Image (cartoon, rainbow, N blue to C red; front, top):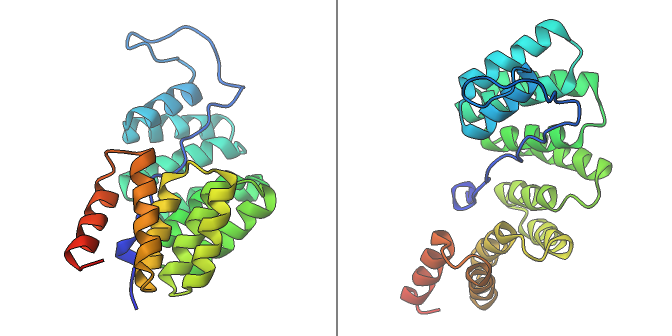
Length: 216
């Protein structure tokens, strides 16, 4: 049973602004002249080519900078260049093997490629390093669902919600698994809870409408 397309892998975690970012003079557009800070700002703005240029400049100066590889990997991911993204995430982890967010984001890339075993392995590592990482439980649940391991998927969504009861994606995704299992009442309950938290969630609203049309 293929249910990958029924699940939303969601956006990558936002790149953290690390404390070493400079507070120097700004450019005419209000962006810092420090290439790392500027690359982070471009990444937040969706200007991925410019972000890649700035993180590459950082790496020319300090080639052992794991955070710059991480930032550039995120920019490549959002551009759709998954192989380059994985290459940069690999480099970041070579330099900093305890970088939980990189394992998490590399797992998202693998999941997007349908490589669920690799994705699950990366989410395992992210959770070993950060056991309270609710989003990693959610995404590992998605990967388990992609493999058809629905009970394990529900366990991970449950744990994500124990850690973060307001994680909308976990309710939405758990509802999809319940529906695939034929548990329509629980699916409805999860999508109604999704709308309680996010009244404009189009996916939850659509799923509830489909349930109603199907007589559930």
